[in-house]
Length: 420
Image (cartoon, rainbow, N blue to C red; front, top):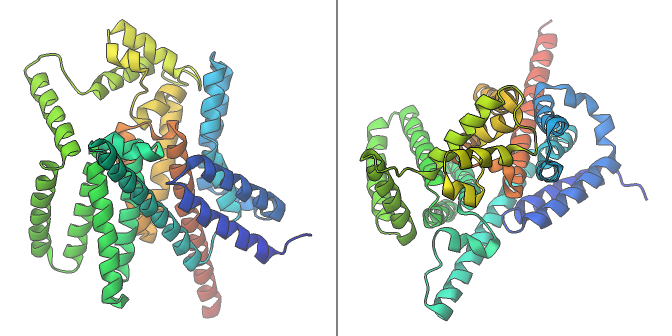
């Protein structure tokens, strides 16, 4: 039996909500949901009906970024690694194809999708908390920090805290936007969610995500207070918030330990004792490989081999033993695909953000700022959790930008015709 257009739309919307809910809990199951979503998309015929929508610069750039990895197969020598990377990055082409040709146009559905993600993040955090408490009861050990806390879901702290940070920013955005029309109970409930996610992020002790979240929250708050003519109060509250954050950093076990290690590394490096953050060595190696393959990079599957050669040449023992990537997505892409790929990544990130500024899409700006920070210290697009998160939400918000832009153009056209 052939389904109607409305039935396909309902399936599409519900599968996207299910995907966002499952994403923080189980990436493989969320990938299965996307397969079902893709099948519904193909059967619905939206690819052919709305094929013209792929001619816009956004989908062209997004799809080109993935295709550039395909072209990287032509000059790679390690096909096993290359094909694995191609598979991991599939969301970077699937989501633009699906979402730009089968867009979500109703605001309440968009809101429901975001709520599903927030709920999934909350349940994931509860699951980890309960398991950490069970471990404490059984073994008497503290599992409420850093890698141990995320291990119950196989979540690296950086990715986990990135998910939670976006959930926090989303709640805060809608809280501020709808503050005047929300009841006191709803304001309290949303505030408790924000506090819970912020506390959990601190427990995960991912330094860059904590820094990114604090900077984004602080800047957003000060801008908001300035626009409301309360900048002095804003500075005062920010100062109090900074003191509270400092207190938490110096008292939460996992974060305290990681802060201490970072401080010792800085002190030892300043005294020229040859100790620095491991990422410095990784970035050093990345620049060395970029100089060797500046234009097209190493190819999709050869990056780790080339990095390992540099680790060995420069006697970076820990990096060689750990077989580390560059821990910086900008460098990771540039090493793999050359300056061409690195420039394309920047365009893919910054062009939609420019339109978001023009359209005052503040939630997209919050997401974009979080991604820009996260890419600095992690190769986010090298993992399934990273590509699913970035691939979906970057395409999702870009889809909304294009839809809003087309609505604005139609309104201007109707206004112009009416004035004739």
